Length: 79
Image (cartoon, rainbow, N blue to C red; front, side, top):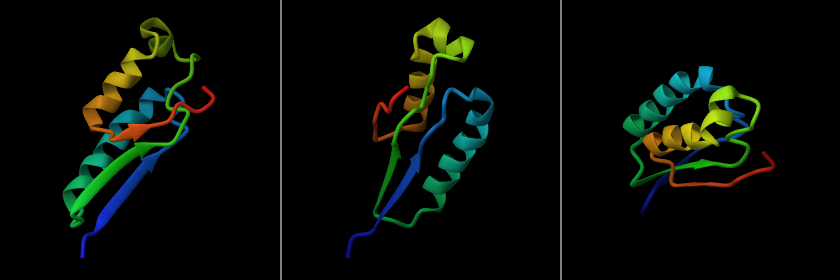
């Protein structure tokens, strides 16, 4: 029997101050998972244009962070 673990984030809204804590949670979840397959998704609103770093990089700073966490997929949301 195959087991999977799905972890998701949503409504991050460019709150970069929370990213270190989220990164630790994701890393710990991957490490502690005994599932055959681990999937990480963001289900929307990972960024908005309110944060200066997001605005200055046109969202690329957010995407760089998400890529470092090895997200499997993300949806755009309304932001």
